[in-house]
Amino acid sequence: MNQSENIQSWLRQLAELDSAMRRLNENSPEIAGIPQRIEAIRALIPTSMLAHYDHLKSRGKRSVAAVGHGFCGSCHLAIPRGRVAELRRSPEALHVCDNCGAFIYMSEEELAEAPKAHTSGGSKKSAAAPLPTRRRGAALAAK
Ligand SMILES: [Zn+2]
Image (cartoon, rainbow, N blue to C red; front, side, top):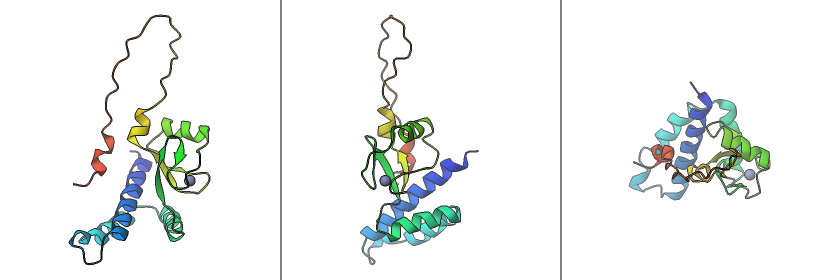
């Protein structure tokens, strides 16, 4: 059972709910139930990570950000190549931006754009198979 995968998904959900809270008017009907969902998710996340999340949030930063084209979605600085490689190797693990400290993850789109590795070394022509579309992130979409 991969615990870090759950924590990453909880942190992403928490960030989405927190941003919904900021976006929505207090009297908006859409806000109903969101504080309760936030509490429920916070109860699942280890305290140390929650503290880190809140620390970033209190400084007005994005606590959880997707990596796009090798750049951190929070501080917009380039992620070192080694870190990008780690993100690709274990996209479900928890990673932190070396610069701003935000929890970072690689979006499904970014993972799908993995550089084509020509490691076969053979001279035979290989037919380019269409990449299967990744739909793992669909669970996060609002229902
Ligand atoms: Zn960053």
